[in-house]
Every structure is written in C-alpha cells, then in structure tokens.
Image 1 (cartoon, rainbow, N blue to C red):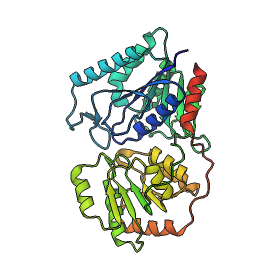
Image 2: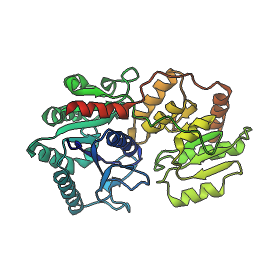
Image 3: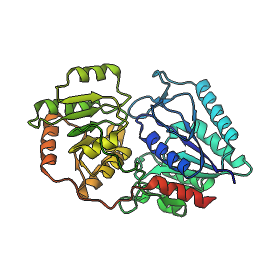
Image 4: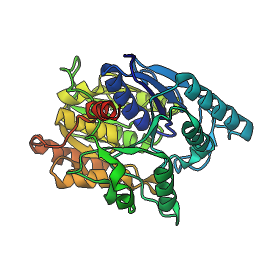
Length: 376
C-alpha cells in the first residue's frame, strides 16, 4: 500500500509561529509514513518546514503592518492582482500535482481572511476532485477574537460546506474552542482536540545561559529585547544572558543591540537549539506565542511572559493569563514595558522555585498523525 498523501497549506504573515507548529506536525506525519507536501507562502525561514517532507514555496507575501492590514511582497511593496493570481494558479497546480488523500489548511477559515483570493478557489478545486480528499482545518488552541459582525457566521458556513474536521491543537483541560469562538457549538461534531503541539523533550544544552530572552520571529519584539538588554545592564544579577532577536528583526536594529551589549550578554538572531537552552536556563523571558510556550512547558523552566497585543491581538494575553493562574509563569503587560519593570520581575522570578510539573498534554503532533490515520 502506498503512503497516504497529505497536502498541508500554511501561510505565516508576521511571526513564524504558524510555520513552526505546522512543521512540527508535518514531521510527525512523515515519521508515521505519510507522504507530506507542505505549501508555504511567507518569508523563507532557515530550517523550516523541516526534513523528510516535500516543500512548495509560493511567491512570498507578508503582512503590510503589525495589524495585519494589507499584503506586501518580500521587499515590503504592496502586491497587485496579477501577483495574487499567479500565486493562486501555482497553489492549484500544486494541489493537482500532489493528488492528496488529505488536505490540511492551517488557520483558515478561522483566520487568514487575507488569503481568500487563493483559498476559496482551493476549496472549490478540492470539491471538484474525484475522489475528493478529506479536508481539515488546523488551528491553535486560542483564536483571535473577532469584532466585526458576521465573521463568525461566515466561518461556520465555510466549515459546514467544505470541512470534514477541525484539528484544535490544544488541551481541552486548559482552554477549549468555545472559549474564543462563540459559535463553536454549531460545529462541535467536527472538532478534534489533539493536545498542544510541542517538540520532543529537549536535549542537554551544549551551552548554558542563565537567562534566555526571545522574541519569536522578531518582527514585533524589538521593545522586549531592548528592555531586556537595559535590564541586563542594570541588574545586580551577574549571570549570563542570551538575547534571541528572531530572524525578521531589521539588520540596523540587530547591529545596534549587538554593539550595546555588555560582556555577559550574547545577542543572536536565531538558535536552532532554543528548547535545549531553556532546559539549561534559570529563567525564560519571551512573548506568549504558542510555540514558545510549548517549549517552556517542555523545559519546565521559570518564565516571564510579555504577550503581544498590538493591532488588537488577544490570543497571547489569554494564554499568559491562564498559565499564570496555574502558577506556571509570570505575566507582564506589553504596554508600558521598560527596563525597570522587567528588572524587578526578573528578581521576583529568580527568587521563586522552578514551577512544578504540569499535566497539560503536549503530544499534539503525534496525536494529529493518529487522527489522520483513523480517517483513512
């Protein structure tokens, strides 16, 4: 019997969280003998979508700004209809070339409305295929709250018309889809919880830093990194710091941060061994993105979370608040963050013991593979 074919679409627009989670799932599917094709459409990130999967890279689009208003190409220029039509055609060609048994679309229709120009034609193409592949939506545990009237109803309509299942990559004991999607009960028969998609248990670190500060992809974490750098200068704690800016931080900002770093602070763009660094660290300071939090939960280290809230984002705030309620982190607001506030939080966090073992399910990638296997 040939390996079942999976066609996995993922579009990251600002950070790299969506791409990282999808890559972890794709790797687990490949390990379970699926033939996986990952279609990406965001800026290229070294190491993703990972080994043992096929990859199709559409012409790059990114968010026009932190509020996800408009689309731009890799150089920051607004994209035109001709550019978008070319992307759409390349996506449909990849679908027909792959002839998948299962199609997974990351985020849509709960998010990624900006990509309707190619995703609605993709849905129509899937419906026209014989045999028709199974169609699944892949979403994180906490959705961005929608305020515009009719958006949730539109999402439900698309799911009922086109999608067989919704893979919710979370632990329902921590948060459920109805917590952030008011009409979840209308599609309850299609919801499957997989557990959080964390990486494997991290290896022992080859290099140890006492405090690890990270800003995800780096597109929106400059203020956090700057505050951490100044806090490191002022702090009476003389241990080592590693500041990971993310690959998308502008070069001028990276150069300025590196030039101003004291001797006990290393400033780097990316660390492939980030989970291992957390295992060896006394404290992690980061935003509250899905993948970073999963790495923190695996490492079971102390943490300070500064959730990203620009453009009305609510997802990270809810995650940080619930983890703080479980005694697994300290949460600080992004607005008004400065070195003084961060320095005091560091002192408080280091004075407390490391968090006790949690009971959250973090094996979502492997569980996703089992779910797909059951559909066949």
